[in-house]
Image 1 (cartoon, helix red, strand yellow):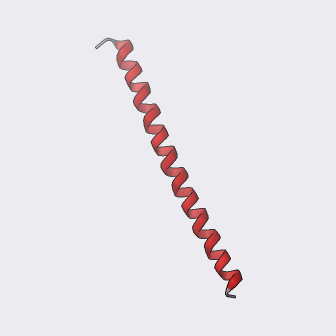
Image 2 (cartoon, helix red, strand yellow; image 1 turned 90 degrees about the horizontal axis):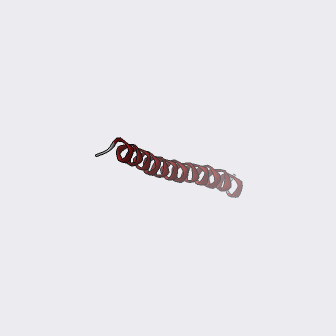
Length: 47
């Protein structure tokens, strides 16, 4: 395998990893915001 092909592979793997991690973190963040929102919403309905 030439160095150039290897570099390209590393770049692709890094890009894929970053995409997966970003998506996971964003999903996690949305879930947490949703839970916080629901909890504050519940408090307003049932004081």
